[in-house]
Every structure is written in structure tokens, then in C-alpha cells.
Length: 169
Image 1 (tube, one colour):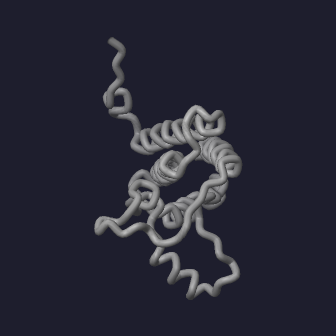
Image 2 (spheres, helix red, strand yellow):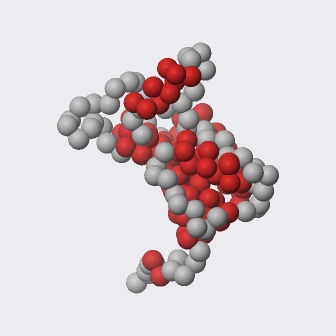
């Protein structure tokens, strides 16, 4: 019997545990993406959201690990990638390259007040990609899509970003 367990990470710094999980989630996302490109699994929305959830969760875990690597006593925010990105970039200063969040919403033609209002009403990606509707059974507002080739490039960018940041923290 082949077995693995949580004991493999016990005692390691929490920052390292978060980063290890981040790499595992990114690897799973890359595998899912490759299977979709190679037509081993259907290129349908329910498979696409799994791919995106794995990637966004990877970024969340990586940022949390990188933040703790810089400041082990830092209180971590929730699941908001924008908030985590801002906190990491502020703490990293010149010590490490800035993290460029590839999952942010960009609508530059809107005014700041309108953009802030939209962001506050946005469904967090950690929820949006996990469930087809809210707790009341109401489907998420908006229309979402995935460009497989473009997303594959985002995954490559994440991998390079992680390596560059890890080399400096």
C-alpha cells in the first residue's frame, strides 16, 4: 500500500506549507488545461470552472505563503486576491518582484467610484467558480467565459511569477 499524509508537512514553516499547496493546485490546473486542450475531457463550462478555481486558489495560497515568508506574524486577509496582492506587494517592497494578479477585473474606461461599486458587488472568484448559483438558488449575474489558449498562458505566467518571488523571499 502506498500512502501519503499530512505528517509530511507537519513542523515545516506555515509559509512553506501554503506555497507547497499553491504549487499542487497550479499543477492540477495545468493538468486539467492540458486534458481539455488534448480533448481528453470535454471543453465545457463545468470543466472550465474547475480549471479556473484551481488556478485562482493556487494564487491565493501562494500569496498567503509569500506574505508569511516575509512576515510570519502577519494576519492574513480572506480570499480576496486583490487584497492579498496589495498586501504582498506592500510587504515585499523591493525585496521581491511585485505580484501581478492575472485574475483582476479591469474596466479602465469607468470612473473610480463606479469601478469600486462594481467590485463591491462582484461575486468572489472563490465562490463563483465553485457553485453554479448562490445559496438561494439564484444564478450568478453576468456572463463568464474561458479562452483556453489565453488561460494556458496565464498558468505559465503564474509559474514564472512564483519562481521569481520564491527566489527572493
